[in-house]
Image 1 (spheres, rainbow, N blue to C red):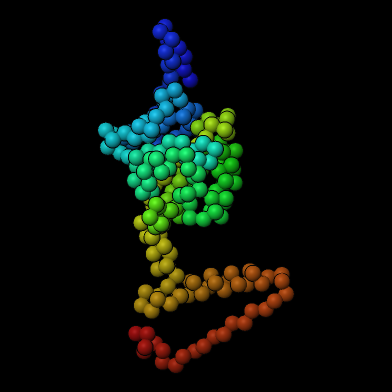
Image 2: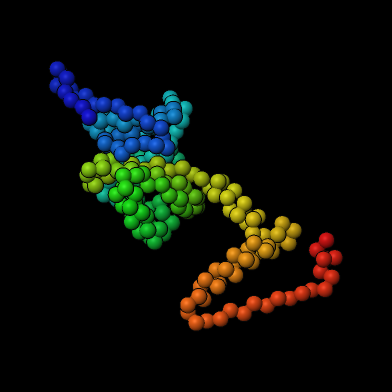
Amino acid sequence: NGGVDSSGAQIFTVTVNPVNDAPLLGANVLSIGQGGVVVLGAANLSASDLDDPAGGLMFSVSNVLHGRFELVSAEFCRLFGHTELELLGQPARMIYVSNEDYAAIGPQLADAFERGEAYVGEWQLLRADGTRFWGQLRCRPVDAADNTAGTIWSVADISEQVRSRERLEWSAHHDALTGLANRLAFRETLDQRLMQLRGVGRQLALLFADIDDFKRVND
């Protein structure tokens, strides 16, 4: 919201919210500071507003309009290994690993926006040098009432969190000594196969092998 003062200058309301619970953005420019997001009037739009080094906390942020990068923060450029000039005006598709991933995110965005929520998802993303990393994408429309106004994206590198999660999942389904699938993995795989065969008129064979004195080897 805003108005005009006696000199004719436009006045904009500034809203501060937690980064992880930002409201639908009603303006084009996003300034990042310590612990929060500051939304300013569209008339002040500039790339420098996407960074706040004085705040001591940097976020990877971009503004996407018509599927192309309109503004990118310095941290966004650093994360993807591109210069600002290499990104501006380019299709957002360039940071995704595949055309299939890029196509799949569209319906998920639309679904989240229809519910009045931010989109949050985990995707493998592509750096300029061809390396991949896991990123958590958060997205909100610039203007919820105008789907042509573009979107604001923030990206966080969560590769280490994903690796830790995968290690935990692997440990839960494998024997630490042999690396073989454990009883839990066997049971889950068997249940999946049975579900797949249910109602299709096919059968499943299960072979049980008993090895004598295997306990001595295992111990």
